[in-house]
Every structure is written in C-alpha cells, then in structure tokens.
Length: 341
Image 1: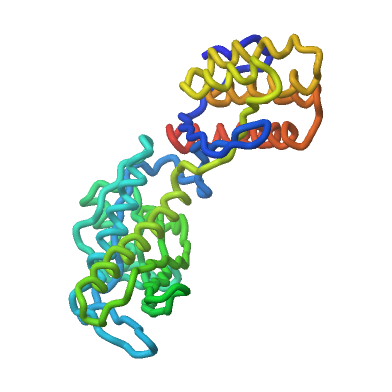
Image 2: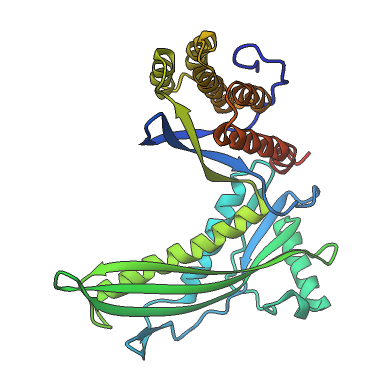
C-alpha cells in the first residue's frame, strides 16, 4: 500500500478503522474512530486452541435480592445461566482473533479451587486430561463470580417514582497451561451496572425478574469482555478531529471525507499547502495526516502531522503526533497477537 501523496516515510499496514463523525466545533469537527489495540498479556506462541470453562458452583437456591434492607429469594434464576453467558461471550471474543480458536467446555462446573494457589497436582492432572480430550492447548477458567444485587425506589422531582436495579459483580479468571503446570494469568475484576426503571415493582412481579435477568447477563458479559481484552487485541474508541474551516479546500476536502473517500480528500487538502497563511497550511497538512491514518498508513501520517507542526506548532498537532507514534509502537505487538508470529 502506498502513502497518500508524496511523503518520505515508510508505509505500514494496520488493522481496519471505523469512523463516526459526531460533534461540530468552530474550526473543526470531532469524530470517533474504533482502533485496534494490543492485549495487555502476551500469550505464549504455542497456545492456539483455548478451552473456556466455568468453575462457579451452581446456587440451587437461586439469587437473593436486597430490597429496602430485606432479603428476598429469586428461585427463577440460577448461576448456571450467568456461567454460560460468560463463557460463551469470552469464547466469541477470542474467536474473533484468527490466531486462536476457542470452545466452551460442556460441563459448567469442574469443581476446582477458586484461586490458583490452592490448585493441586491432581487438579492439574484433571485439567490436562480435559484439555487432551478437547484438543486444547490451555484452559481459561471463570473461577469466581460473586454478586450483590440491590433494588431501590426513589421519588421523582416532578412526581411519580422510579427505581434503580444495581448489580455488583466480582469475577476472577485463571488462564492455565496444564501441560507445563504454568499459571499464565490470574485476574480479578469488580464491575457495577445499573438499570433505571420507570415506576417500581413488587418483589415477586415478573417485570422485576426480567430486568434483573437482563442486567445480570449484561454485567457478566461485560466482565468476560474485560478479560478478553486482556488476552487478545480489541477495539477501543479514540477521538479525532478534522479541520473544515479557514479555506475553501479545507471545506471541500471535508465534504469528500464524509463520503469515506480519504484518498480524494487528501488530494484536495494538498491544495491548501500553496496558501500563504501558515495556519491554513498547518490545517491542510493535519488533515492529510488524518487521511493517511484512516487508510492505515501510520508512518506517512506521522510525517504529515510533523509537517503541520512545522507550519504552525500548537498543542493539537503535537498531541496528534504523540498519538500516532504510540499507535505505531503498538503495531509489532498487534501483528504478533493477531497472527501468532
């Protein structure tokens, strides 16, 4: 892939970017892009197929709601549903990365200690046997999922009532290679999610159970997504700006960029570099840098951002240079984590 317009920097192919333009400012527009970021953990290269399993012992009594300081049992809901939602969601996120395959172990509870420190050699042998049968290189366990549920009712400012349903969920994840008896990772999270409901419901009304079920699944899937981001690359939102005011070519290029044609937009913005006003040239060079980034060309983007700073040094283009350099530093890790090289 060639750089957009002439620039001495070497091109580097990166992963796809999605763009949504959102807010208007006086001289530029702000928009959000989803960029791929590397995982926190570098998974050993010999691990390709992961087994995802739950170690949460099903609660035969169901959950307990705390409402106005009193406890009420919910026999309609079981921890097995949460365990299944968590393991399915984690496996789905991992399978997004072509380096891995992930499958969910059929048994929802494999009866191991909740912390790695208490796992015995017999436990490791059992995990090794399971992984051998399932043809997995390692196993990720949801070893803990403790929750506190609260439901409260409030009076509204303009009359009537509303209620807040809250779930506090603590999860622990263990990533084990039983063939080498190695704990690859152990991580705990605590997450809190809320539902705001119009009005309020009695403790045994089906609407309250339905709201609770939806929120519990959302909470445990959020926790699984957090752990997925720890072990495999993930998309994250990042803000960008594009200049559209100060010169007719800035405006015209911006309208073209809105169609998704960043190459054509960059060609239009090139004409701003002939302007005698250094601020206009700086904005044009900045936009060309942005166009390169949108096309996955980080090194040319850095070159144009530095050109923008040379024309008119300020905090905007300086910050953008730092963002681009950080993204460029991440590319080696991303390629290794996605391709397993």
